[in-house]
Image 1 (cartoon, helix red, strand yellow):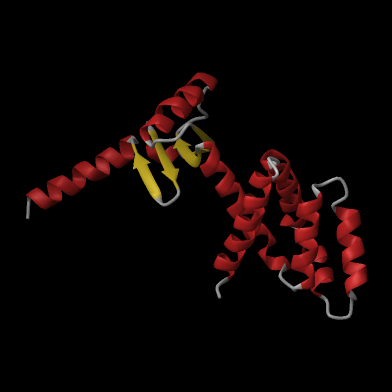
Image 2: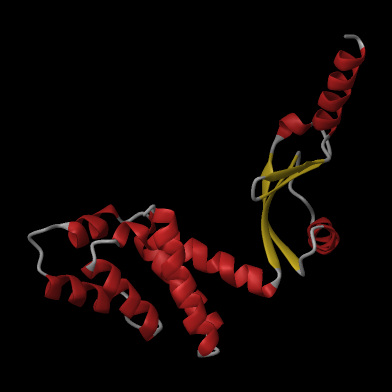
Length: 181
């Protein structure tokens, strides 16, 4: 079974448990903290995957490292360590956050612009574009891309909405090329 499917199953189980206990925000906060702990910590992953380190030592490290986080999240991480699936943790966190965003009507995007967008522009984009794609709100990262010449380009998942000048020029060029054939 692919790692993506396995990660999604763990995330779905955690999500259902969080909803059942009405603690969605606490789970999300704990999982975001777990993501930060595991994100760039190669030594932690090496330690947890090392065959000579016994299960008690691994469990003790997890308990101490994740102290203060939601008990169910810590227990899930311990289970993943026992099953030698620590490499799935970032994928599980991402799938869980996607489930939370879907439940709350939030879409995550990347907005490319020639310059940093102002606070008013960001707020207008959040409200107007969220309505356009049928969501309650839009969370995005603003990436500066001088090659756009002007306008913006928005990437939501695998879909790109291109309202940039360079994009419009490219589409115009395509139309002229097709018309001349």
